[in-house]
Length: 116
Image 1: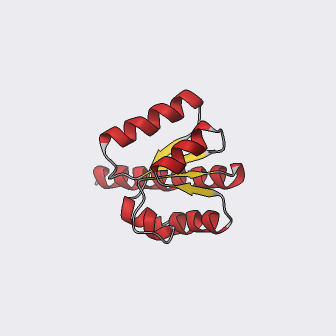
Image 2: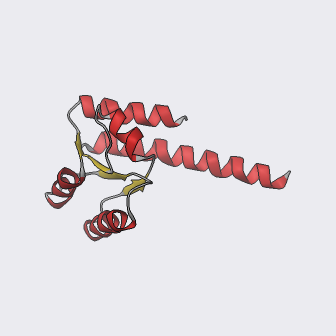
């Protein structure tokens, strides 16, 4: 599963109107209980990461630190985005599974390289 495949899936969710992006909109979706998954850019500041991870932990909303702000922004047709919320349970569940599969494959690849 390539990075582009996951970003394409996020783009599809955006076109379906199921994504809130940007720090304010993401926070609002989380607080109103509309967010089913939060994506935080890997290059977001430590303060931003802590803010969203704490908020998601408190409200029991899954989150992933994934990709970078420029890639996330371009996926949504914008310049950059540090955070976004997926506001549909079906999209969120599928996206979580895709990210976890990619992370598992990366761990397996890393493990095989270490054994050589």
